[in-house]
Length: 117
Image (spheres, rainbow, N blue to C red):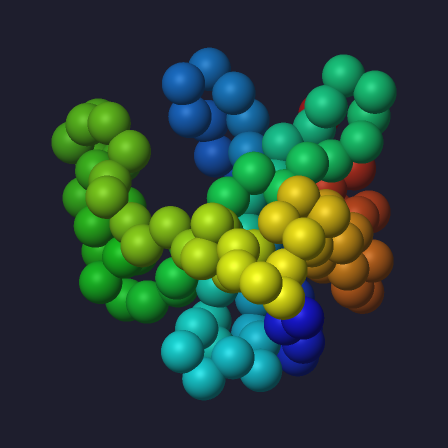
Protein backbone atom coordinates (compact mmCIF):
# COMPACT_ATOMS: atom_id res chain seq x y z
CA UNK A 1 0.00 0.00 0.00
CA UNK A 2 1.16 3.50 -0.76
CA UNK A 3 2.42 5.54 2.19
CA UNK A 4 1.13 9.09 2.33
CA UNK A 5 3.89 11.45 3.41
CA UNK A 6 1.84 14.63 3.06
CA UNK A 7 -1.68 15.56 1.98
CA UNK A 8 -3.18 18.99 1.39
CA UNK A 9 -6.54 20.20 0.10
CA UNK A 10 -6.03 22.26 -3.08
CA UNK A 11 -9.37 23.32 -4.55
CA UNK A 12 -12.88 22.49 -5.70
CA UNK A 13 -13.46 21.73 -9.38
CA UNK A 14 -16.65 21.53 -11.42
CA UNK A 15 -16.59 18.80 -14.06
CA UNK A 16 -19.67 17.87 -16.04
CA UNK A 17 -21.98 19.42 -13.49
CA UNK A 18 -20.37 17.60 -10.57
CA UNK A 19 -18.15 19.09 -7.87
CA UNK A 20 -14.88 17.43 -6.95
CA UNK A 21 -12.35 18.16 -4.24
CA UNK A 22 -8.72 18.00 -5.32
CA UNK A 23 -6.17 16.81 -2.74
CA UNK A 24 -2.43 16.95 -3.41
CA UNK A 25 -0.40 14.00 -2.12
CA UNK A 26 3.26 13.28 -1.52
CA UNK A 27 3.89 9.53 -1.41
CA UNK A 28 6.68 7.01 -0.95
CA UNK A 29 6.30 5.76 -4.54
CA UNK A 30 9.38 6.51 -6.66
CA UNK A 31 7.34 6.16 -9.85
CA UNK A 32 4.60 8.52 -8.61
CA UNK A 33 5.83 10.66 -5.71
CA UNK A 34 3.33 13.49 -6.37
CA UNK A 35 -0.33 12.65 -6.93
CA UNK A 36 -3.65 14.45 -7.15
CA UNK A 37 -6.64 12.66 -5.64
CA UNK A 38 -10.21 13.63 -6.56
CA UNK A 39 -13.15 13.08 -4.22
CA UNK A 40 -16.86 13.63 -4.64
CA UNK A 41 -19.48 13.76 -1.95
CA UNK A 42 -22.06 10.99 -2.11
CA UNK A 43 -25.72 11.44 -1.21
CA UNK A 44 -25.12 9.94 2.22
CA UNK A 45 -22.52 12.62 3.02
CA UNK A 46 -19.66 10.16 2.58
CA UNK A 47 -16.76 10.81 0.24
CA UNK A 48 -15.73 8.64 -2.69
CA UNK A 49 -12.22 8.59 -4.13
CA UNK A 50 -12.97 8.96 -7.82
CA UNK A 51 -9.64 9.39 -9.52
CA UNK A 52 -5.90 9.66 -8.92
CA UNK A 53 -3.61 11.32 -11.42
CA UNK A 54 0.11 11.93 -11.59
CA UNK A 55 0.88 15.45 -10.41
CA UNK A 56 3.52 16.95 -12.65
CA UNK A 57 4.00 20.43 -14.04
CA UNK A 58 3.07 19.37 -17.59
CA UNK A 59 -0.26 17.99 -16.37
CA UNK A 60 -0.99 21.17 -14.43
CA UNK A 61 -0.14 23.31 -17.46
CA UNK A 62 -2.45 21.18 -19.61
CA UNK A 63 -5.24 21.57 -17.06
CA UNK A 64 -4.76 25.35 -16.87
CA UNK A 65 -4.88 25.61 -20.67
CA UNK A 66 -8.02 23.47 -20.78
CA UNK A 67 -9.78 25.55 -18.14
CA UNK A 68 -8.87 28.82 -19.81
CA UNK A 69 -10.11 27.66 -23.22
CA UNK A 70 -13.20 25.91 -21.76
CA UNK A 71 -12.40 22.65 -23.53
CA UNK A 72 -13.25 19.26 -22.09
CA UNK A 73 -11.08 17.71 -19.41
CA UNK A 74 -7.43 17.36 -20.48
CA UNK A 75 -5.74 14.03 -21.05
CA UNK A 76 -3.85 13.47 -17.79
CA UNK A 77 -2.02 10.38 -16.63
CA UNK A 78 -4.77 8.59 -14.70
CA UNK A 79 -3.16 6.15 -12.26
CA UNK A 80 -6.33 4.97 -10.53
CA UNK A 81 -6.50 1.52 -12.15
CA UNK A 82 -2.71 1.10 -12.18
CA UNK A 83 -2.36 1.74 -8.44
CA UNK A 84 -5.19 -0.57 -7.44
CA UNK A 85 -4.78 -3.54 -9.78
CA UNK A 86 -2.65 -6.65 -9.84
CA UNK A 87 -2.20 -9.82 -7.80
CA UNK A 88 -1.41 -8.02 -4.52
CA UNK A 89 -4.34 -5.62 -4.66
CA UNK A 90 -8.02 -6.00 -3.92
CA UNK A 91 -8.90 -3.17 -6.35
CA UNK A 92 -12.07 -1.67 -4.86
CA UNK A 93 -11.11 -2.51 -1.29
CA UNK A 94 -7.62 -1.02 -1.70
CA UNK A 95 -9.05 2.07 -3.38
CA UNK A 96 -11.58 2.60 -0.58
CA UNK A 97 -8.89 2.05 2.07
CA UNK A 98 -6.53 4.52 0.38
CA UNK A 99 -9.33 7.09 0.11
CA UNK A 100 -10.09 6.66 3.81
CA UNK A 101 -6.40 7.13 4.69
CA UNK A 102 -6.30 10.37 2.68
CA UNK A 103 -9.45 11.64 4.40
CA UNK A 104 -7.99 10.85 7.82
CA UNK A 105 -4.72 12.67 7.11
CA UNK A 106 -4.51 15.92 9.08
CA UNK A 107 -7.55 18.11 8.45
CA UNK A 108 -8.44 16.79 4.98
CA UNK A 109 -11.89 15.53 5.99
CA UNK A 110 -12.80 18.81 7.71
CA UNK A 111 -11.54 20.77 4.68
CA UNK A 112 -13.78 18.71 2.40
CA UNK A 113 -16.70 19.12 4.82
CA UNK A 114 -16.30 22.91 4.57
CA UNK A 115 -15.50 23.16 0.86
CA UNK A 116 -17.47 20.41 -0.85
CA UNK A 117 -21.06 21.37 -0.05
